[in-house]
Each structure stands twice: as structure tokens, then as C-alpha cells.
View (cartoon, rainbow, N blue to C red):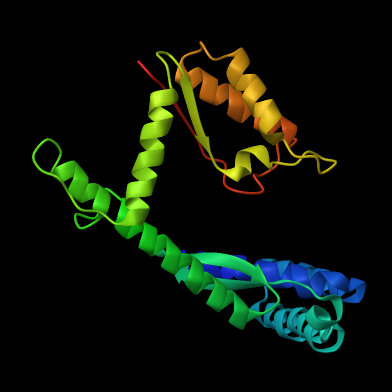
Length: 235
């Protein structure tokens, strides 16, 4: 069933890219849809007429739109992006591109880097550097690579700068790069202003306050990117 819905979603995307750019094609699809509805009703009263309408009218108009009025070469002429699917992290992820080979190559490079960092920093892999450090905590020293050591040094330096009750915010660029109707981004300054003004709030309330502000800024539309925000307070 999951595969069916994914195929349906991709078909709808293709419909938008190709068929909706021709008014004649749109009209033919409308006639086809209405004809199919009439055929579905008539099937209970006169199956033969229903079949004739379905095949001779609905299917003919629909296929005529595909055959004669699809904009041939639309992607190339208009330099349109196409949606290319890649398998990753147990799911199918869409990549918008005008070059499928480059999309595959780029996706492979991104996921290879993700897996490399996963081997260093994840706590879910017992062989990762961080998992080994946690397992040996208070027992023995653990040899790690230069990159892991540098990350740990930076984390310790940040922790020393934090005082009692200080607020730490970790967020993805989807928070501050959310655009409004004019294309202006939410920005770091607005985020800092909200966090500073409401820094004494319970973390759950402060988190909601930021997400609501970002949502209002975007006009309530769907996120343009992932919006992830983690808040912590020293104690």
C-alpha cells in the first residue's frame, strides 16, 4: 500500500509538470473525468452504455490529450526540474534535479558523509567513537580519531562558557531561513530576540513560542525545509 501511495504522489507530480501547461489538455482531462463519473452512475442502470461512454468518450479524450497536447521536450526547453527518487535511511527521498546522473552522484556523496559521521558520533552503533567513550566512562581511556577529539574539545569549550541557567539552542537552517511572502528570511536576529526575551520560560513553552513565530512568519504554509530546534538549560 505504501508503494501505491508513493506511485500516486509521483503521478500527480508528473501531471502538474506536463499536463497542466496546456489548456486544451486540461479541458480534455475535465471532459474525461466527467464522462467517467457519468459512466460510473450508468453502470447500475445500463452497463452497455456505461462501457461505451467509458471507453469511447472518457478514455479517448484523455488519451488524445496525452498524445497530441503534451508539451514535448518541456523539461529541456524550460529547464524544468524533475523529481528523482533515491533510496536512503530506509525510505525513498525525493531530489529535485535537471540531471539524474548528477543527482545520484551527489546523493551518494551526501549519504556516504552521513554514514561516516554516524560511525564517529552516533550512540546507536556500539563501534562508534562516542559509544566507546560512553562505555568506558570512568573506567579507562579510549583512543579516538583526530576529528572526534576536535569535536569533543569544542563541546567542552562551549560547556565551560555556559553559566548556571544559561540557555543553549541548537537548530537547523530551516528555522532561520524560513521566508515570508516577500522572500525575506526569518533570520538569526529574530530567533535570538525571542530566545532572549523569553529565556526564563519553561523550555517546552519557549520551544512552542519559537515554532509559532516561525509559522506566522511563513504565513502558515508548509515548511520550506526541515525545522528542528533543540533547547537546553544548564543547572
